Image 1 (spheres, rainbow, N blue to C red):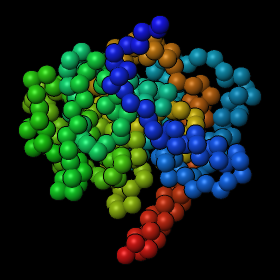
Image 2 (spheres, helix red, strand yellow):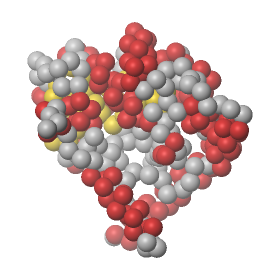
Image 3 (cartoon, rainbow, N blue to C red):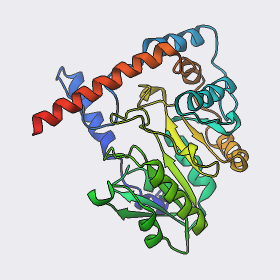
Image 4 (cartoon, rainbow, N blue to C red):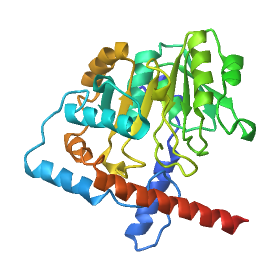
Length: 305
């Protein structure tokens, strides 16, 4: 019999994907399904992004890119932070990944030794703990509630930090609660984690889908933290499987080496398509969609009252 590695006993299914498969099966039978099982905008990828992907395919852009991603795309991502958030970012710190899941795998693999623990909020994105398990680390889910906005605080980190802890993972906007960490809260978290000798990892995958204020980025605070982001949510490119990671300069080389060995590079076609994502035309489309999501939220709130 094939012997399955012990770690697999600790890695549970991502049940939402089972639900999605069942829903797609019902759609194939002609049923009308309202999808509430997975974090995916119901709008298609903006047409200019699709056109850019089609043009890249037609022109033969089907070869590997550098493991860290197309230089032009990394520069475009850095430009996005500069224009939208006023943050000057060296494109060399940007690593393009196969979805933000690829970024999480890189970060945990580079930071976590076997037996070390990573603090994270509970509830949180269920796959996060499994990325820690994959590298033989220990995910420490810390219960959070309405009193902290369903977010970790500097005080909770201080309370739950262990001798074997090496990192703290937070999300803003959070999944599944949607709450935000203010810049002052992020600053307090960063200072506490830094003082304890750990690293702060910030998931900004739902960045842009904010309805009360602009929101911000943890990159405005410091250069020694990790920020994860994705083209899936705000940009509507879920099936293109493309994300990115911004890392401290000193960690870029090990991340690059690991990416070369794990997945070689993110999908070439998706990267060329994403070059159009930051164009004024696409940003206008995305803003219209954001306002539509905001309208739906307001309608739902009024219905529930």
